[in-house]
Image (cartoon, rainbow, N blue to C red; front, side, top):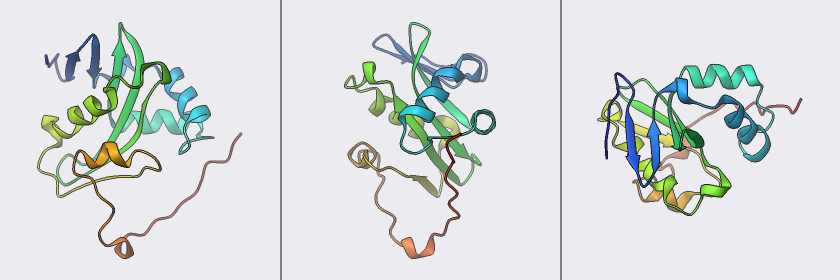
Length: 152
């Protein structure tokens, strides 16, 4: 595993690369996937996604300079992190990239010592349990305002 170019972390494994360099992100591919293929962000406005990416620690997954996956981490870098928008494109699934992406995130030097990590998933419980995630112990303490995106 290799790392660090300036302030952007780079990790290399089996011909794939994970980088936190936002200038490498393929916004069009990310937007297409989230808007058309994800169950959690259908209808997300482009400007909303641009703002979300800009204000998050993003982990892009690349094969020969072509982006094939993403995870966003929303964090104060001191106490809390929320992992979201995790995906690997269909053609690159089954190669262990999601597991490697999660390993990279939870071991990232800027994301250590948190009191709480959080995420939501409908179908990847097995992946996240490998990294210590469990169902919320006291869901009655959690509240939310949920406003789904309206397809344009």
